[in-house]
Image (cartoon, rainbow, N blue to C red; front, top):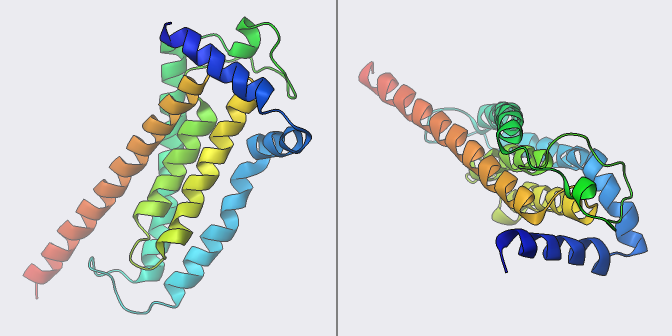
Length: 201
């Protein structure tokens, strides 16, 4: 059994066997407006930063770090969109809702290509900096929230029959890589800035 066959079988299992009335309401909502659910976390992150007056190891206040983290997450999501467009054209994989008969469709089948999932790559690119860069002032359980939300949004794409599981997996891996890369770059720039400040003291 090849990867494509396994991919199709897993898709059909999630799309059919996992189907229920609650998911039929929840999954379209996650797909269309799930990103709005991260807003409470952003406000909580900013509030937490305001309540931490001491500077972090880069010399920035926690509030400034929170603002920079949101900006980095937005940049990561924008870059993810560019990577998504390029890879979809390169892979040119037809969506399962256009290639497989009997798919349960709740929403219209998109006309764009399938690999990678745009929802997955953008969600994880945005979520990873929120998880990675807030570890000094947000508890781990709270930091997991954006990643869990990204995973649920990604899962919704398979449930709705518009992506293969490997489309979502590829998007999640790429989005994570983009989020980590920009987060590490930000930290390196902050460390370099701190070193320069110390040299001038």
